[in-house]
Image 1: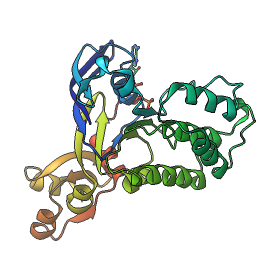
Image 2: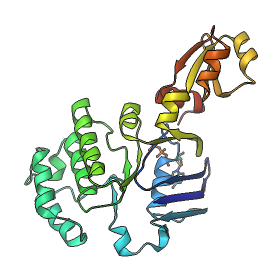
Image 3: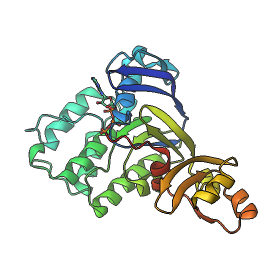
Length: 283
Ligand SMILES: Nc1ncnc2c1ncn2[C@@H]1O[C@H](COP(=O)(O)OP(=O)(O)OP(=O)(O)O)[C@@H](O)[C@H]1O
């Protein structure tokens, strides 16, 4: 579906250099701290600027050569400014109907009603949760095969978040060929939704793995300085100083359980991955 090879963008204090793919039918989650390069990556995929280097293809076509038919198959929640602030859902539906062949007004308005979104109220009067729901409903309103979702659950309370995630899961369940690339700071969202996770840090992908692999094989190790010296040459991916010595990450949990039964080895969460794999420099 999407292939990103050697995407590079250089800013005065920032260098992006990433390669990854989103296969057909897969949901890939991008996690990273503020300033990691998520938006720059997304903007390049949407061909919103010309990167310094890189081969980016979507639907087997370079992203700067997508036909208008292919562009119709992309749904996105990207972009801070959405529709004009005074627009109502009824007005937005008219625009979508004129813009997208795959759009169905009745289905869209019904989905908005189901989510209890007011059809005749100006968008600017919507709460954060209402805006997030509407953005996602719009992204899913025209039978897109590829969804690019930038922080779709950012700023939402837990109930709205679950409702937004359920909407997305329904959409994916309707067609097994649909693919998603999404970014999030909220690791539980990614655990429930994603097939694969990438950790982006300071413009580099520090790791990528399937959720299954992470849940089965990844682990954190709480090590004293002396223990760290003893095991650091083995299968550690990274380690960070911690009050007790070092917090280390491995993708060989079983190895440590079998060979070092005295060590504190625990399954790694996505938050652990972020903590251990990202650099200290604050954004
Ligand atoms: N047009 C630009 N000119 C100079 N620097 C830029 C430009 N756009 C982005 N940057 C820098 O590139 C880095 C990555 O920014 P980007 O917006 O991609 O990060 P992000 O991961 O999306 O962050 P956030 O989660 O905070 O939105 C930042 O250091 C940012 O200051």
